[in-house]
Image (cartoon, rainbow, N blue to C red; front, side, top):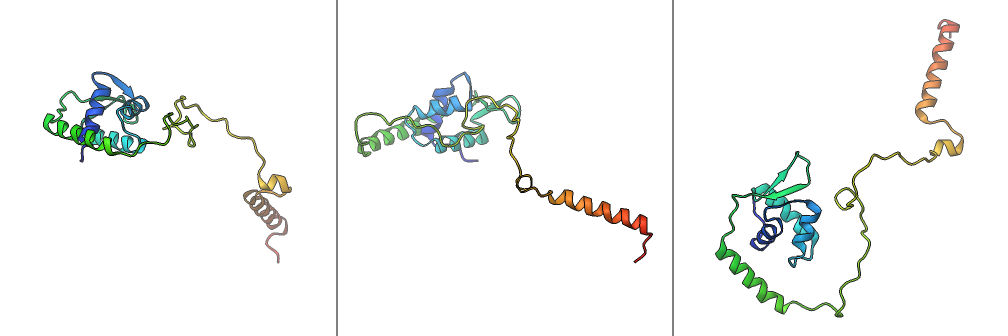
Length: 160
């Protein structure tokens, strides 16, 4: 199992500390440490879980995580990674304008992105194509035809 980058490990350790957090809060906290791509942080969380840095709290499908108390970050590698990050951030191109980006509503709403709790769906009331055109659905038409065939076989006694 590959562990996440040393800088990402440090961000996970700083955000989690001794707390237990939901995945959304954890990812948002790690992104506040300078990571701009959410998918990278999500993949890093999966790697951290697989290599044993982060533990899942609760059931198998729980979204609550805590830091494994036995996990140790190599301070030499951490210092080297932070120095390299500091060196590269000075050369990074600046964003246009001084104002921060405007918040955009999310395009994807789902259980992994939507913060609201999941609720059972009552479905959408809509008419099928057969109902709109006045036709019977194929499975119902087949049952009627089979019923008529068996009825006529009983009446006629198999006479052809």
